Length: 445
Image (cartoon, rainbow, N blue to C red; front, side, top):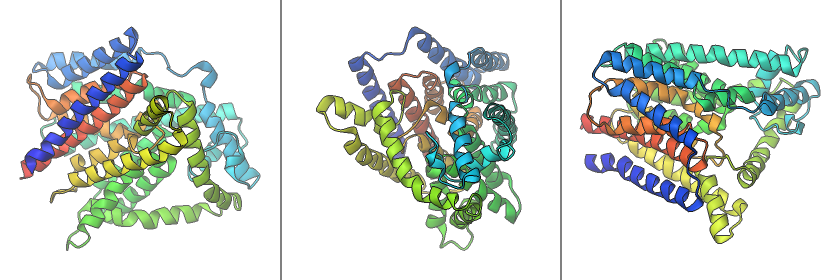
């Protein structure tokens, strides 16, 4: 059984690389020379910072990676600066000032709570202009990224005894915050950074909290994370699955106890949000499912930079067999979601479910199971990237390390905005997490 569990990520990696390479060759969609440089430079720097036996060389590689990313210009075009945030601002105006559905604002698609509420709060109840409120939102995200970095330092240092508190690991973790996809989300004024940091707080309360209230805090943060970006429902499912798998145990692990609290807190948060902007808030919950379905289908059909596997496959089927995207997309999205969920549940087939390695596949799967994945959604799994650095830093050495190789190449590929390359990158990162989890299961056996 252990051999089967170990082989699955490796076989999946071979299959994904083969398919992506064939697709790029068929379409002639190879990365440009500039993209190839960023890919090779990023992957090499990360691998050197994690693998070299010399501490000085590791620090140089980590510093080079950080400087490499800082030297990049903001990838967001000037005409698009703040564009997404303005949909939140206008949606909040409809919800709180006009007491009607926020989706009457063009382009508004966020979950009814709490994105519109945050925009309204930052605007001081609509008294500040869109442009000024956007700048406050950028400042808030910069502050949250700093908090996320501090939490990751403390978490990895305390969770992984073999993780030396070296400068190279910290430089890598800092560099991961400056990835082009993360900066693009900030430039557009979208909210994946807020959701990603909320999830980092949830992990912190789960792993480092000592009181009963820390589990409630974790459940609240998990709910806020998926409400800001519903893609994180897959990460939320980790805690729910732990609860369902372990509810008969006399002593529940902390992850299961958090899972037991998630649904009550989700209901509570939505109920609390109803009086805010009533009756617009009720209309928002009524309209959201339809808005989300229409928006996802429209974007898949029209956008060339949607990196969701279901989207890429649906468009490929439309080109090859003239099948309508709107007809194949729901089936593909549901099929991929079920397959990913089953694989994640298989990874929990162990007595030890209350570990970070058990959580990582569920978090990275957040970028795989839906039909809509922008490049900036990489911010949703920042906690996973920062934790993986700590895991991989435990086992240094010059030899080839498969999960380390997957992580380095995966992060490098996510700097490339070719649809096949970027999607391959998030797949490799997911396989890396499954490989790390399978190693944990084998060590336990």
